[in-house]
Length: 103
Image (tube, rainbow, N blue to C red; front, top):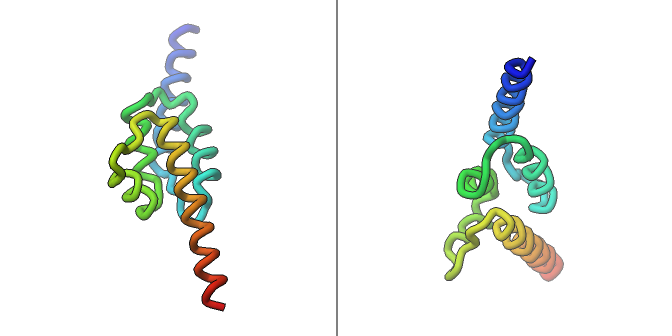
C-alpha cells in the first residue's frame, strides 16, 4: 500500500510540473497569473530557484525584462510575485492613462 501511495504522489508531482511548464501569463493580470501559478506549484516539489525560473518563463516579456534589469532584481519567489504584480499593475494603469490622453 505504501508503494502505491508513493507512486501516486510521484504521478501527482509530474502532473503539477507539466502544468507549471505550460502556464503563461498571456493577457491575464499578474495577480491572476500568480494565483494560478501558486496553485500549480503546490505539490510540484519545486522550490525557490526552479520555481523562480518557471515563473519567469511564464511571465510576459515586458514585465520580466524590467524586473531582471532593475538594480536589485528579486531573488525569492515571494519577491518575484510581489514585484511582478506591482509592476504589472503600474504598467496597466500607465497604458490606460496613455489611451485616455489620446482620446
